[in-house]
Image (cartoon, rainbow, N blue to C red):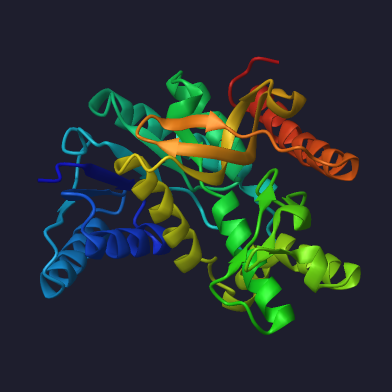
Length: 316
């Protein structure tokens, strides 16, 4: 019998959607929910538990009202933090969400010593760095969900441009989860055919720009929140790969230790995901222009980390 446990910290739109979708897939024995808002935590646990019974799922949902109850998880997803609002950049979220992240990490690691942690909170790359710093865990155990989401957004815009190929589009995005992300047309295909073969340079540039602004577009339309269906499903793919040891290759945010020529910086790169978290980092053979774009993306994340070191960790 499957005995895997998944913990979710933060049961707002992303966390609740993730818990619901994960529960009905029946790939873990239990899901533990944790949020500062105890009534919301209990309400979500009740609602999702009733959904699992309708679906005849064996997954059990628990509302954890203290740190001691939130324990023995194999995978923990952290979505906690304030949401981005219209006109607010991911950078604006930095200091508030870093403090929240440190608090969450300090509360969960004593009772979950063997967990793999997936970060969803924004600004994503900086939050992965913060979690690594606060926990002092190895880089393979704390991973950011962003590249799968950004690649899915790119795939949507490719389909929108082509008008065909739904379900056959493989898009690839690396770099930081922000305005300087690097959508890779060279590594993107439609039914195995290179994107460069089916679209003009102008069309590809338009797709790249739309991908970079994919999250902001949803924020603007919603007015009171940000995307949650695509982020939640993207996170489930990571959870499945870890719990089932699938060795799947996905773009995720990890601490670089020399890969692509960078150290002590978090960025989205292709990784192999398995039971140990990050099993391997895949170094792509980038063109010079792509290397420059990736370097620019790294610089954007570095500026956030410099701020964190000065104002949160007091090391500079």
